[in-house]
Image (cartoon, rainbow, N blue to C red):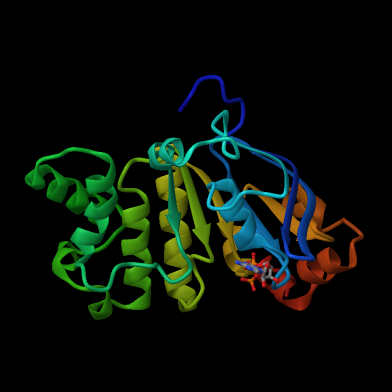
Length: 256
Ligand SMILES: Nc1ncnc2c1ncn2[C@@H]1O[C@H](COP(=O)(O)OP(=O)(O)OP(=O)(O)O)[C@@H](O)[C@H]1O
């Protein structure tokens, strides 16, 4: 990680528009190194779009996005491609290539960014498979042969293929049963601690939020409010009150 970067991610005055539809209107967000930041907000408030801005898949209408001290908005496509190795992304549905086995999926970013002998590539893929708690037999299975929880782990293994500094997760526990979701939370905490990852996780899962988030960023009124769960619960904004003090949130916090 470049030494000059004080924080992992700095977003300043971000404006995102699709035609006349303004999604973000002055978003400021600092993600500290080594924290797990959960990103929440109502449907369509622009959580996924914010992730896409951070990884340079979109150019904002205005504002700055700095990742590890590098300006994402000013990068050329070649620079952006080589910078990709600093972050890994787990998309909502895992987004694995269905025609490739799990090991081959994990090898895709290794092929893209490194020149390695096939045997070493395979060894790294097997290591990532073990790290994410998949059985060794999963390596040669196709995504369609795996359960939803295993597919998420395989997606996570691929996101970790290049030993990134930053991990971005888009609804990692969506579609998992409560035990599968809780196991995924534990895995995420363990990997984050062991690898010193900075994690941004979009989630609607209140249990997961309580279990793993160090801080929470809430997208409301086209901007972001960031704080700890305890402090956000005292924020008077109506959406924040409903979300963090509603019956489901109280149940997740053991107050039900
Ligand atoms: N490529 C695009 N072109 C036009 N509008 C888009 C595009 N991508 C996203 N949007 C719009 O931007 C808004 C924010 O989308 P986004 O997917 O970020 O929401 P979200 O907060 O992740 O929602 P959800 O929780 O439902 O997944 C939505 O109104 C969506 O329709």
